[in-house]
Image (cartoon, rainbow, N blue to C red):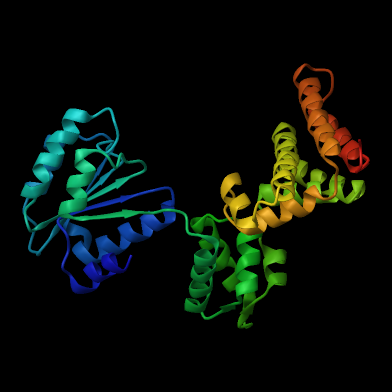
Amino acid sequence: MKELNQHIKSGNFARVYLLYGKEAFLIGHWQKRLIEAVVEPSLNLEILDGKIPVAQIINSAETLPFMAEHRMILVKDSGLFEGGRKDDSEAMAKYIPDIPPSTVLVFVEKKVDKRGRLFKRVKDAGFVAEAAPPKEPDLADWAMRLSASRGKNLSRAAAYHLIRNISTDMGLLFNEIEKLVSYAGENAEISIADIDALCTKSLDVKVFDLTKAMAAGNAAGALSIYAGLMAMKESPLMVLAMIARQFRFFLQCGHLAAAGIPQNEITSRMGFKNSYATKEFVAGSRKFSTPAMIAALEDCLNTDYSIKSGKIEATLGVETLIVKLANIPANIN
């Protein structure tokens, strides 16, 4: 993003930008900074949302700014960079070189086809930025910088604890850090204890804690976590599906680790966001033999069938399963 920052600092803007990707917080951040730099106050900002006709986009782009150097046209979710609007996409690609110097045309899209002519034309003539979810170390750095900008110190250990227990979603993390800054009050440090006291663990983390309790044979602890999930109105069937997924991850990660596959490769193969998850699932796999984990998955499947066929009530069915899995012999042959 150094190049985009340079555009903003220098005031030398490209005529066309494409911002796309899965990390909505980053896209919103970039969009806000561009608007503030190009047309603040926003008298010369026009927002076109949805599948707007290309002729309308071009007409807006041809309009001169009012008593200012630039005018920004912000086009959101146009679909021009995907399939389905081929003729419109071609027409837009043809127009790109003719964008007036006074116009800054910004496309914000969720999905793009990088093979398309329009994508290539925008990349050649302007600036393209993909908002991909940051890797865990980069996310931790960002959380630490954000906390520091609010006058609070967030250690790297606390940053990792926040990310791993709450979310990797930057928007959610931003809100949680804002709450933690207020909660810290006069204290300069945001501690792990503060995070545990104020922030709500993600559903994934809670279910992982539940399965860890089961793996440890702690039925009471597992049931306590499950009761908390039910109090929060989580779906018993969703919890059941996630328990099954956890045991599937135990089985798969354990198999790969036993085959001598390095931890970083396991992380890649499994599609995990960080190696911490791999470490936890490999450790969990060691609690059970392979037949025991297969038996646990079969119990999950049978419970799902019993609930959906009306043989047992959902909340009770999952509760019964949790007790059974917490007492399953670790070394079934």
